[in-house]
Length: 354
Image 1 (cartoon, rainbow, N blue to C red):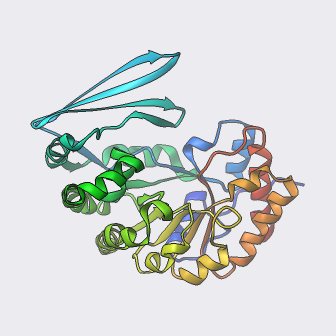
Image 2: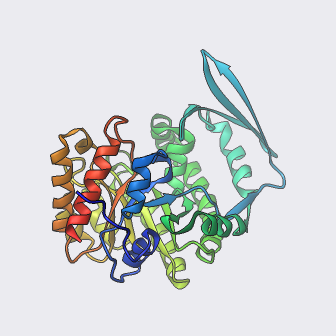
């Protein structure tokens, strides 16, 4: 089979056209910058229209005039660890992570007990935010039309506390015993988010993600409705005022709050992973969210299937998405010995559907 020539639209233009409700030339195909090794197949995929989603360029900087951050690296059992000490006016906090490729595992959490609430209050209240667009603009120019840059807002306050600072078990105990302290902390974080929204919305970035990775059996529908949904709605209002788009990384089981996501104001559902890897099919997603872009994650389990099944699954996703807005994405790791042939198979399916 002859290689497909690059389309008239650049990969970036193709993605942006679909996001903005215009006619795209093909079903856009994207992958995170951390998931695509440089090689001959990578070059072929980009020539065929693959667009890289780069999340590495912030559009704001955080300044903490009265809080000091110190980090040092050490090795334990042959593994590198990074310990950070945060010196606030109310006392010191610390956490430790273990780098693991493009991510890191938390070894020691910042919240260790009720004595840390006042320290966290002091840390968050001290933060100031300023626009920082220069690096973003430079990267946009230098990286060119095979790359779309995505900004970020961070997590919803409750998710930040639950997952980022406490961990699920500690959170459950604190939620039962000191819910008022958690809610106070969430209120302070929400105030800070309101400072961030306009900075990101006025930035050169067309798109920004706000939170995600929510799990129904952890966050729960009631908490999602009370502590997550209002922040999505508030941020979306600010973004839309400036002609920008906002999405959320919802890659788990979403049926429990599908009706709430429908009224969230989100423009795209990023990393949505259809069945068999979640409790919603593509048809379910379009039924609940007909006005939103489905920026999916190709089902990870299918990467282990025969190559014919990979291409067949891609074709079926495209088939049921006709007349809708679909971006075929890769947001999770692929098997090292399968990623090249699987990506080429998905690209073939997109090409044959064009």
